[in-house]
Length: 96
Image 1 (cartoon, rainbow, N blue to C red):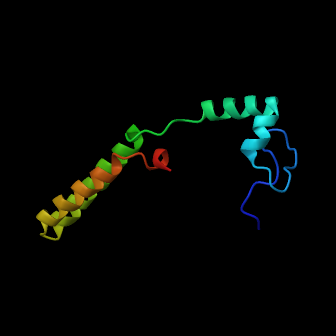
Image 2: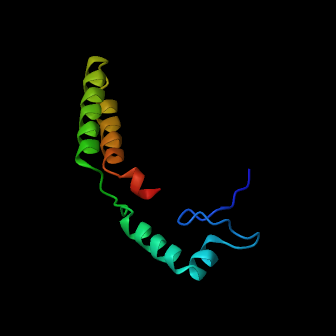
């Protein structure tokens, strides 16, 4: 399976053998406009996670602390919860 794009996703035209999508969009004005609209509509990544993701982090951290308390290893539970909360506050989809 080829790793390069064979067709323009904006107009459907087949790209020449050595032609890149940037070259094609530079030549075809309507494709360039469509590409600009597509890039401006993409959500910009943020390092801050959504409220739902942070809430889930708190729930998981609470479960870890509760489990550690039952197992009599409270310090390990607190350390694990700090790690869980730190990971929950990063928007991993924005970093991709």
